[in-house]
Image (cartoon, rainbow, N blue to C red; front, side):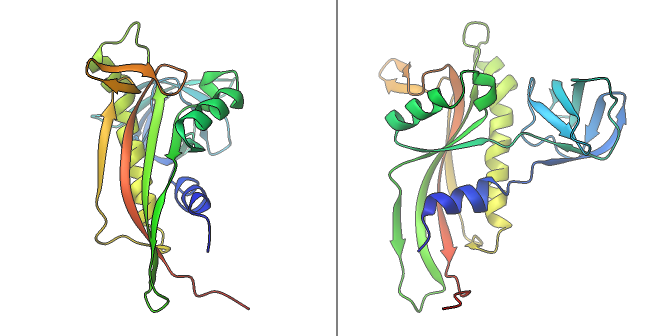
Length: 229
């Protein structure tokens, strides 16, 4: 029996399709098939692993504007996004580990946090579905609370985070390890990610100003038949 943490990390998060198909470009202004979770100030890569910084994202017209981080010009048909950094644990443990991961906040965002504990139900050996696992995954990114109002947070960050949730779900659907034809899920957004009180979201759960989307989903893991024992 495989630990659900490694299934989520290795079979879902790592396999999220981070390649953006470029349809056309003029200089560093790219018209793409789907911007996915691209957002302003994200570091991205071309097919030669040249690094760029995203200057602007037009989510309605699927346009990404880049700034090269070196003396090169974009050429090619693929742009590779940064995968979310995966963490797992309780709020207290994750806050500590995330804080120690890197002193530069920009190098540990966006964040994909699998909140523990995780509940799972296991079926009999005759069932082709080994287990159903109830996941709570929170996708988080930076939030400029001093300068952004609520709609700015949606425009600058939450649109990209919702797209990231979509591609997380698509990663499940595209992996034969999971039975997903009847899969449903629910989301809840946090303009300010914090502890909820009667006054709204107040104290930060993670020691940073973040915004995000909370995904609750049950995945059905197929039984593995590749045992060679």
